[in-house]
Amino acid sequence: MQKKIATRQAYGSALVDLGKSNPNVVVLDADLSKSTYTVKFAKEFPERFFNAGVAEANMMGMAAGLATCGFIVFASTFAIFATQRALNQIFQSIAYPELNVKIAASHAGVTVGEDGASHQSIDDISIMRAIPGMTVIVPADSTEAYQATIAAARHFGPVYLRLSRAPTPQVLPEDYIFKIGKAYVLTEGSDVTIVACGTMVYEAMVAREKLNSHGITAEVINMSTIKPIDKETLLNSVKKTGCVVTVEEHSIIGGLGSAVCEVLSEEYPCPVKKIGIKDHFGQSGKPEELLKHYGLTSDDIVNGVITLKGGSL
Image (cartoon, rainbow, N blue to C red; front, side):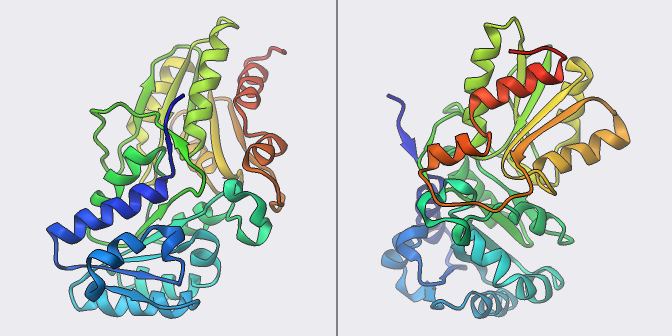
């Protein structure tokens, strides 16, 4: 069975390596360090770790202050708290002055599971990508999460790094190299382009195998950087396939699908099917149950592709 690792675990490992190589890296957490895996950094570098307590807004203010002193700051908490409790501080104190703060947001999406709607962030991508100058990254697996954390430290300016709670299968090759703003074509195809991010990249790859049995070859793109989006890779693929299915563990309003549609509507209009959470709140359940309930499984992707192409199952 393929080994699964949560992207938040890779984030914690990357922080330790960053701490060893760069004394300017500091880490903040809102009393969730065991869950966000910043506890690893805290044990190695206690003098550069600060627990802000259950006070995310204050933590973002602290992060802004440290950044003005030349530190590379990673502010860590759950995605729902980062984007809803501390949005004003992120907007006013971090993004507006273009400070070097990385907002690491774990437990994103409905796969938080039994914690329910109060802990399931399904609109954070739309919120963050609307903030001017904010880079938004959603790693697909632990390999990409590790590299994205390193890349975020090297990138000057605010970054939103969206991480998962649930373990995620490895989908990227061992020689994969992450670059901010660059999408990755996992498989080539000629009938449809499937653009996915985060945990949904694995489901897209499974869907691709199922589509083969229907005589449909899908080009699967891992669009891990939602902003700035890789227009070149997207357009090159769509000019070949002529249609797109987007897949995200997020609301279909304002997320990956919307970002893709913004590009296509201006530069290459074509049929698009957006697969994600409709205009609903989350609810409690096991992750796999919730993915099925909200239509985020590989079978849902297959159905979406066939429907888009005018067929039926």
